[in-house]
Image 1 (cartoon, rainbow, N blue to C red):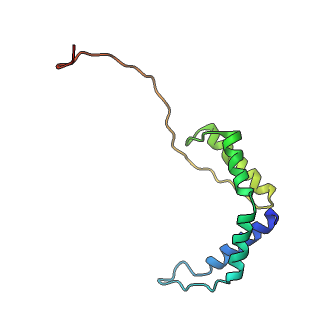
Image 2: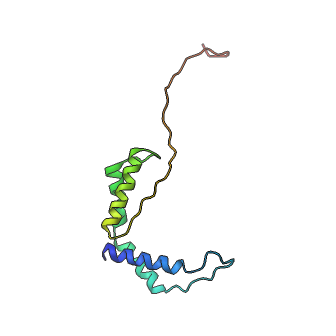
Image 3: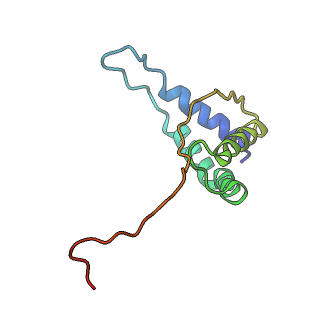
Length: 116
């Protein structure tokens, strides 16, 4: 099964699951066709597309700390993979907090009760 067929199946599942109005106090459960769910499951289990994207992230990008250049590269890489699969991708700007190591210093001090 091709990625585009898997994507279409995933979009069908999203459409089926999102038919209840968000404003309803008790949303109605949509009718779900077990055959459609089985096809989506089978497509996901027979394709290693997602695993290959994960392998690309770990092998080509490496650790992706928040706000790091590697995190930005990972976003770009995943967007490109989804676009190559025929999906429409829109990246939104986001402020991502990140930690920057400051100057380190240490001092050895004597303390009461220290073993000799």
